[in-house]
Length: 158
Image (tube, rainbow, N blue to C red):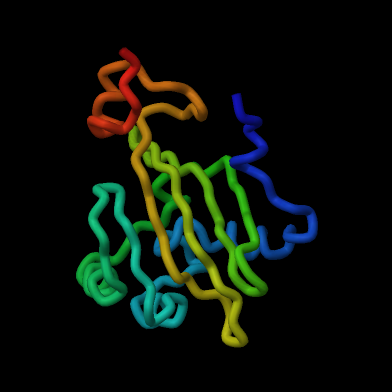
């Protein structure tokens, strides 16, 4: 079994970056990220896009329209809990920030690609994936495995 640290590792030299980004997550649901569409526009790269929990892809423009019509809730006030943070440097000014988010009965794994710019932090990409259990490196029960892996995923053993 893989060490839990693989998923939650943060290099000590990235502690400052980690704290900056942790305060901004979950994106769209913290004051540090922004409270209004004008602030969201500044923090989202022009080429930003995301994959939602449904698996659908969403453009920056679609997200901004939705946020304008339906302002997002504050995650802390809603009682959301985030944990199992991880941070990886992808390039000189680019980082992958990961965590688990519990929203009442909904559990998701989240990943955001952040970039440090002269104007501050901005997001390039985000994905949220719904998970059925808070465990790693465990083969799911047969029924769940059949949904998780398409036919032909594994070689047949005859």
